[in-house]
Image (cartoon, rainbow, N blue to C red; front, side):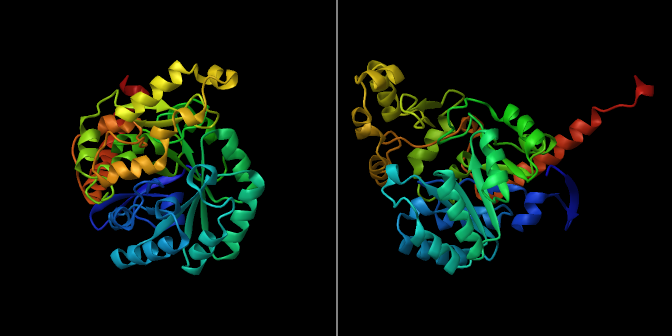
Length: 359
């Protein structure tokens, strides 16, 4: 799954991998499926720049809105894009099995779907229905290599997106960075995998390929582009100014609830409440409940903050790669820079290999 090669495309260097071939894209770069910001503008911007854009069902909230967003995206680009279908109904109010969303996806002849969440029986049913409906490539997001291996063997997936602890959003409870995740994945996965988490430079893309990945999945850096219309100026300014300590992990008191987010007022407040409530031990003892943090953690609070362009209101996902964001650019400018850096990184590495006769 890790085979790749450089090719010359119209005078510019491109990278061909299993991901570019399966997804029909120019560059092995996939946009993350982001609940708050996965709109047609961002998906089309990434696709037009040579990557794979990603609409998100939870961003659309209803099947009707997803249908309309797919049409809007197709009015902006003729290039491939995918739809993310994350099943977490207990947190977003969606049904346990998203049958109507699946119907919209298949009726619109979406070729690529990213899935995340839910139990194995539900995922097996979901993937079978997607395949029957004409979906050709299912990317499944995992936070552990053991999960990825089970998905490869039992869930009928075509590609894995493997998250590291440095990723924004729900990194799971493995607390493992992407470097070790990649090395483990290369040992056990026979299908292509993407590395997700902490990626913001082209040299990191080259490193991911050397570690056996077929490409990378990027969320945070795309949230800092002009095409991310759901985040206003205060959000993008917060990302540019975040620095190396700009993210925190909240929700660790609650099983499966840890999220890496931007360090803002509400995130700091949530950490305070968790700490004073006793954390995971407090949850067991009854001195901490989710109701204690719900007023800052609920998704509607973030939506209200986004509407007011207030980056301090609401908990919003953000990966450690925010430390690499230094300005707001277009998707095209960002991907072009990544590819230049990837090419330069490979040339630099090759230059360090010398024959024994020269030592």
